[in-house]
Amino acid sequence: MKCTVLTLFPEIIDGYLSTSIMARAIQRGIVSVETVNIRDYTTDRHRSCDDAPYGGGAGMVMMPQPIAAAMEAVDSRSARTVYLTPSGRPFHQACARELAGEERLVLLCGRYEGVDQRVIDHYVNDEISVGDYVLSSGEVAALVLLDAVYRLVDGVISGDSLREESHEDGLLEYPHYTRPEVFQDAGVPEVLLSGHHARIQEWRRQKRLEKTRRIRPDLYERYVRTQEE
Image 1 (cartoon, one colour):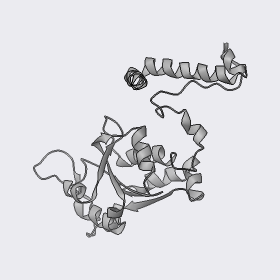
Image 2 (cartoon, helix red, strand yellow):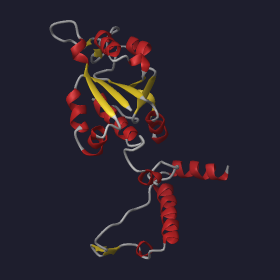
Image 3 (cartoon, one colour):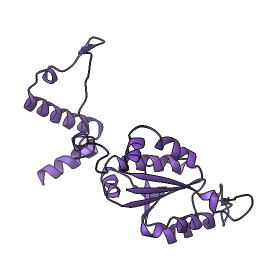
Image 4 (cartoon, one colour):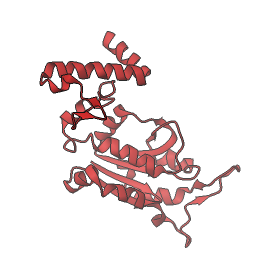
């Protein structure tokens, strides 16, 4: 997979790409992430990228010309082009898996009050929100999307690690324990020390159901309906 991120602050993206699993995936050639500075495509000496909105109102709007020029330079029309915005469709695990199947992604990071609508109309074919809240930085939203998507690309993380994660099958993940066996007078559940794999799997399944019902009753009800159907 190749991903291109259009941003006013490439250093935010680049810093994250140099660490942890993402860095290793890039080094192994499984994924490729390129950052493009929108300011490099301005035409005035001040490298202006924003202006006051027509019709008045607070804040500034990202101008169409630099973004359009950057989009043309990266051939965004041949890729799945996503604008990160609070007014987009909700991002979830199924959406991440869908995007992980794309050969190319172009991510547009908004700032200020957003971007000129004409850019969205001409170049964007998907608008995604990472949650029902507003961020000052489209770069943070892009990193959330990137992190969720790249780990689902074949070869980045083993399938066994992904299989029982939260949201993979509609349930939250079971609790985990490691050494020491006793910590602050609390011990590890005996079943996990038993070596009885069938009992361990059943315990984990029950804990997933209990946790989902307690923390995310909406997911639990949806899961139960799906099982009944």
